[in-house]
Length: 101
Image 1: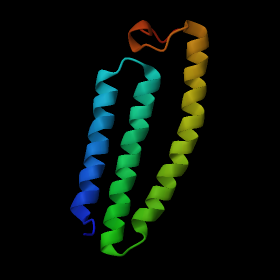
Image 2: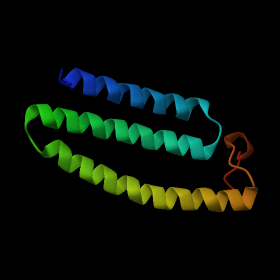
Image 3: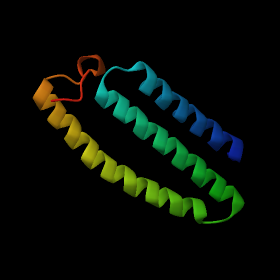
Image 4: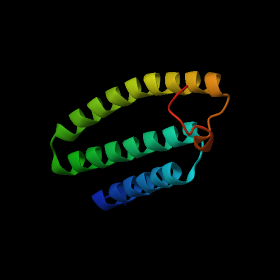
């Protein structure tokens, strides 16, 4: 049995849903950040699946740019989270009410 487009899109939707639930329900900034990355990976999986079944390479090029942007986001985002944690000694969203440090 081979996996069809609907199988790939189902897994992609499941990953995106898990990421969305993680962003909405978690109070920890690091877990929210990881959930956002999971959502990006789900979108990349959907693009590659469409690309595979359409026979083009446009989706793979978009995924390459998504991975590049995600790598830069990881570097900048985690640096900001570490700096915020050092300043406030917490990573909980409820404790970070003001933007003023």
